[in-house]
Length: 246
Image (cartoon, rainbow, N blue to C red; front, side):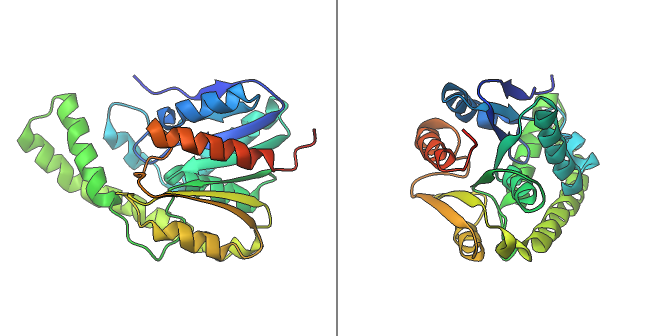
């Protein structure tokens, strides 16, 4: 069964939440509900190829498709009548949110543990293959079948990750053009990306007012569990500082 988007209609202020690579909007369930309780309308879409039982579905898409998904999510909210929108995302979702910050009319936004600086290596390839193997086991494939599938998958995911890296490299050239307020959250025990990417992103935003949050004992996924509760408070505080019309 394919994962569903989250859409909580509440107040006139809207927030787009984008999930991580290999994941789905469940990343944003708790945060979305917290924002809804604070009278924000929340939309967390499913990226193309994500949220299905077959990991091979991802290989039909690249970062360009996920950026398009982000733009379509923004258009969806505008069509619903929401004119003031903030954009935030976890990991891959943060890359999409950053693209929208650079290129679209949004109130502000930010990232949770997102590799938006191209200089740093990540553990995404290795973690992806562990996830891929687990998903194929759940589908009922035998170990020898999975071994063959993994050989092809390793090549395909590298193509996707290279496209993401190239996209980030292009975005980096424009970071000094961002003058909006930007939220950055990073865990000190991130097992997926280099935690110094967040610091470098902060330093690259030379014309932005940055709300920087470091969670020393937090893993890569910052939006769930005990850490997620802290993040909710910090996000709500950040959103309250944006120049909403009312």
